[in-house]
Amino acid sequence: MADIRMEKLAELLVKYSVGVKPGDKTAIMGESSAEPLLKAIYVNVLKAGGYPYIISSPGGSMNFFTSTPPTINSSTLRRPRN
Image (cartoon, rainbow, N blue to C red):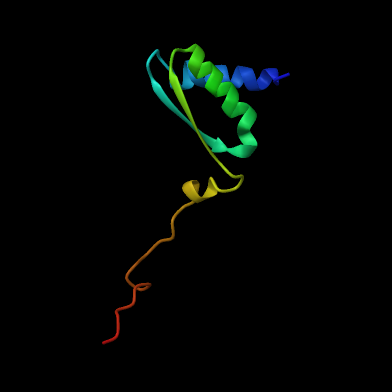
């Protein structure tokens, strides 16, 4: 049995936060540890008439996309030696 809080959150995200309309192509991106929520969102996108697409990745790898890239300035760059 699915957690009712997960269902309510998925419905809130699809109907109000994103506002999925019939025919909308919707990417759902998350880690494998969030699979129950991803599935609930998937179902709610279908109910709204959208076309869901899940992009799942192994746990912890999403930090790669959300972390701040290192700052590069002229002092960190080196010129090649001839």
